[in-house]
Length: 617
Ligand code: UDX
Image 1: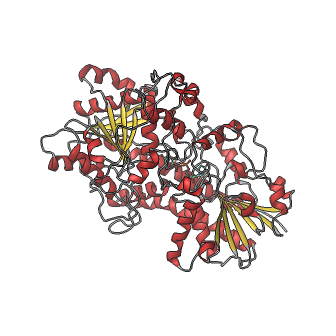
Image 2: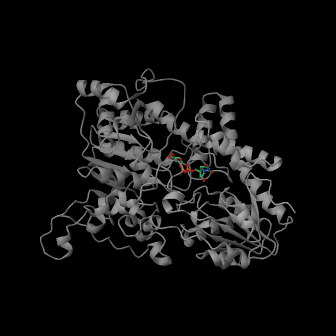
Image 3: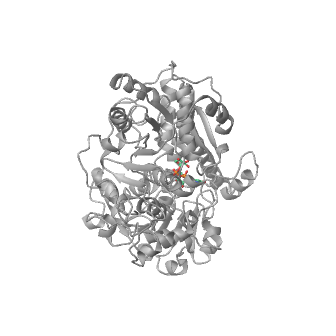
């Protein structure tokens, strides 16, 4: 019988793990050395599963995964589990997290994260699809699809019931102790791994989904040896490559799936079992098997090389500003070389997000731990260039405003670290605001079309630790708006910090044309593509709990209906109106190289863009 009820009680408490997303770091870090152990598969060359298929299938009877427990209900765990469940209706997928407030939100109308298309995926897998007859009240309820996605705070029980456990918890940078500011903080990962080793059934497949330092699987093996002697667990590395804002499409159409395993028959068999789960919607040629260490390292290297590319183009943008070359023209010219390719060449205020900086630094730490100082120095420069770029932008703003912000209103358009996401982790906006605050402006106004103002305010309030009150409500100068025009009105300068389509000053042919390609260059999938007819059969969504921030703010942020926004043209700002309400001289600082400069200047707004020589008096 289809039901909107989870088999688990979302209010269940009594969990014994650490929170999966701690805000403090401790001093533990996985041991790094140059030795190998029996789990080493270094001699094993990379091959696609289709190549490896026949030998694995012939030699080993691979296990079938019928239930998956994903530990960590965050930006990776939640969407990944939802798509796994969507595409495998016969597999029971349970997402667990010790944070029962977060679990309550996953079990409600307002999910804890915003991702285009995610609500529909969750509604199908979590709530199931009911027959129209049910809506009409015929009484005979026969579901089109039963729920197979569950969210629970009963961590240990769900782990003990799963054939495969995915560990998808935060692995931020350590903020104290050995490797401070560089090494990966393994506090949550280690705690969850210990919980998994303690509670998992003998034979369970343990999967590293989190981005972890190379050789983390060895740490888990050692735990098993001590805590569960005699039990056998295979450990797989299966890093996630989804990007914020395009998570659902990245999961539905990944470039590749990487599964790292031990090279023993049991290891290969476990890899095959996981490959089968993905093969329900992903071409086998895209499923790549490697040894565990290669897989762990590949994730760090992929992110580091993307970040390196951005730092490279950003360094060139400084040269452009000094010479009169245009960075967008340079990017297009070099991107036409198929050996280089055109993606990830948009210069800007520097990369943000939860991954790039921490993964580059993790690579630096790995190299330094292995006494490869030159390698570490090389990669560290990627992060330093990123900070230089952001600071250069802020300095340029201040210089153009006659080196004083006193009495001036500065408007920040976009707070999230990139468009189409409410994710603010490592957002350049916060660092820019910090620098602007030092100049004692009359007001810093913030508007973001995706982020809940309450969430932004909470982050801004945390700056108070550094000095006097910052939010206007507390007597400071920062004010967060839910209306873009009110934020811009009376401003001396507008800083375009995130490249939301809403902020662009040229017509979007259609939404498909404007944002039909994501940052990875893949074509966009509308949520309806998940299953167009499914919408007609949606079951009722569960209600929100009393502590839901989206209900409290009453803004509609996080509303499931917001997903429909991506199917309709973005409501773009009326820049003529904004210009009419700004103070002269009117400045726009384009931190993302997305503004049509002549058009903006025809409205009387002077534009300074990254990678362009800028306004000449
Ligand atoms: C990244 C990786 O892309 C993804 O594969 C991995 O799993 C997680 O880390 P994410 O950080 O979510 O994803 O977003 P991404 O689209 O990669 O953008 C990262 C940052 O680079 C953003 O701040 C974005 O604005 C910036 N960026 C991206 C540019 O400045 N220019 C570009 O051309 C592309």
